Image (spheres, rainbow, N blue to C red):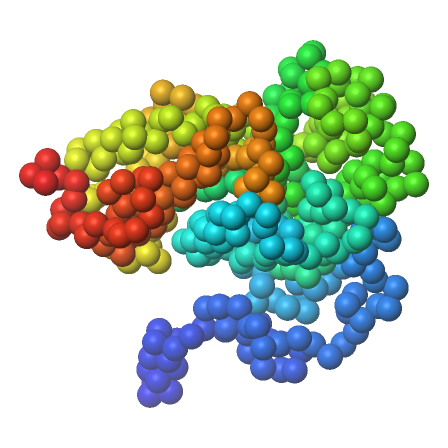
Length: 406
């Protein structure tokens, strides 16, 4: 009886164990065992495994499953595990404010990833000398899939895409049967044949063999292919509004959906119910109005005004979603903030923005978007930007903000 009591005490107050490692030591359920890697050979020990975009990967699903079997602490929660990937050019920016904007855009992504428990990888180097510009993302995404077998999703986010709703989480349950999630519209692909039918600057791609095969096919229309020069004219013959004469990654993906609908459409989710990426021209003018709408929610319910630690921020975001935003689509006039605001065409590093944009509109609105997002982060630290056009100084918040008394 004494032994039973002692065992019961330790079962309640000590970390529990569910399985044994290959070396006989227990695996803790309470966290990831990041100090253990079995000595038995795995796929990383295969000299023929290549991270290069030029060499295909085979049997990736089997390889990932074997990795999980030998690293059991990573199994719990793996179906929703995300690694965010982003990047920029390797050289200093020509635009005087460019490096500052890229730094702040990266901070924005780090803030979002930290709040929601995602790992993040930033690349500022070309992984293949020919795969530059918009094609540079594919080698990085493939390398990230190989480097992170524990992650179910790789989330590519362009450097000029800014999280402007730090609470919102992609509804991964909606994508259970899909392997690629990208903002877009089927009717614009199949009826209007437009190269803007989707935006490839932000996407979630499942870490699986289907995705490895997609990347291998996708890059065959890129600069690494000996047939690269022929693909631009082919794409423009179908998507007549395409601006660039050379083949680009976005039109290449639309081409695959258009030409091979039966193969790709069932596994690619074209998301249009919220701004997985929202074109900034349609978003930036609503920052003041949407801020007031969110403050109204907080005046109405004291749960949202309650001070809390950053680590439990998801609880309050989920409460707002259920109480005020359930069923609300994003878009102009919506109560919901744009999830990601994409400054397409602004080119913050080179400064060679779309000539249809006036003066410094791009840089000024990027600063406002960054401060709009930063207010949602700094709120937990007790401060906000009182003027979205000014990054510093911040204003301390009174207790119970924004109650009507303030």
